[in-house]
Image (cartoon, each protein chain N blue to C red):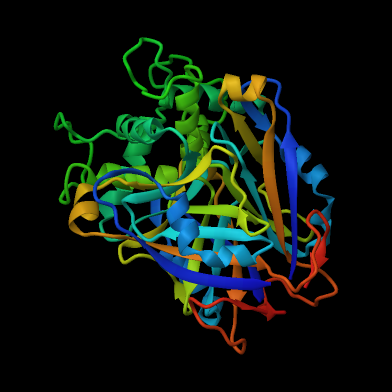
Amino acid sequence: MAWFQKTLTLTPSSRGSYLITDTITSSLPELANYRIGLLTLFIQHTSCALSLNENWDSDVRADMSDSLDRIVPEDHKHEGLYRHDAEGKDDMPAHVKSSLVGVTVTVPIVEGRLGLGTWQGLFCFFFSFLHTVHRGSGELEANLLGIFPPFVFFRDLVFGI
Amino acid sequence: MAWFQKTLTLTPSSRGSYLITDTITSSLPELANYRIGLLTLFIQHTSCALSLNENWDSDVRADMSDSLDRIVPEDHKHEGLYRHDAEGKDDMPAHVKSSLVGVTVTVPIVEGRLGLGTWQGLFCFFFSFLHTVHRGSGELEANLLGIFPPFVFFRDLVFGI
Amino acid sequence: MAWFQKTLTLTPSSRGSYLITDTITSSLPELANYRIGLLTLFIQHTSCALSLNENWDSDVRADMSDSLDRIVPEDHKHEGLYRHDAEGKDDMPAHVKSSLVGVTVTVPIVEGRLGLGTWQGLFCFFFSFLHTVHRGSGELEANLLGIFPPFVFFRDLVFGI
């Protein structure tokens, strides 16, 4: 059993939905050591979220942002939708979206690589203008756990170390 | 510490919400070996999702599908809700639902069984007609990690191996 | 590698969104033993949810409840929104919210403490009147896994035990 923990930093330039698969895998060369395992990512912000989604068409990223804006609208008509509004009209909607999508993902590691589907990529969402553009970065805590060689293992066979 | 990884395949016959607790547990007889641990399931598709929900009344499954359809509607009125629409009217809504519900669940293992509440079951959602019915199956990556006998352990007591 | 499993009980007085960071950390003094690791919480109910959200302003908790009520409305106008309605008007919406927000969170442990962002706290949501107020408590299964001293480790360095 091996465990590896590392803090990663994302530096978004604006609000939006980002495909971060390559950023994550290039920041975690240690992935290659794991024959089987799990990668857990946790973003330490309440106006961001992590998810898996379609990795090929950038329209999906724009559609994700728009869809979440429709599901959790800003209070453009001043209807008093939110009490918490000191940090911008998008702040409380950002918190709601963050809880809906979630701030953590757990991805299997298979033979030294992320065990993603063909069209599956890691997404990071930055929902708040103030917290993204003015206050900067998104810190991610990455945990890698699993089995290294030289431990003998057989995928699909039970083993214990 | 023991680790077990296995790929499971679900073969849905149509779009919808499925209760998969029995399918999962019967596909993973290795569960019985774990005194304490975690099961992580990850579905390798972007138009599916995994969740826990009420296991008794099949109406809940139909209501879940309908509710998600209301929250993430298809573009029936041609309002231009989505840019990404080449693979069917339900494709982009499927991606949104997938990110909202999530593609991974982590369930505790207690005394060789899933530590679910009495009325709690594992759900799998297939949101896209094209990807479900035409292109087939849903691959799940299952990871079981935890503690086997002969390691001595006491639940609610700290131990290290 | 060390593993610790414990059942915690929350006793809400009413429906709503609760900040439970202090309850969880004071119920799990074992956290302090872990240099690096993960805490997984799983709530064994289908009308509850767990999440991370903003920990400072109690308005966020009220806004979260209201926002989720708008996203998954009760059937006040008798439009037949839900088939499953025997346990109260808020029961099926509670199940939908539970799947949207999720019943499990995984939080990194860094140097004996939860690796949360400055403004990040653990939230528990109780969505159903009947299941919360009449039928009582919310059982949480907590799993702590990670690395204890005396194992030598270096954060940001790979190690195996």
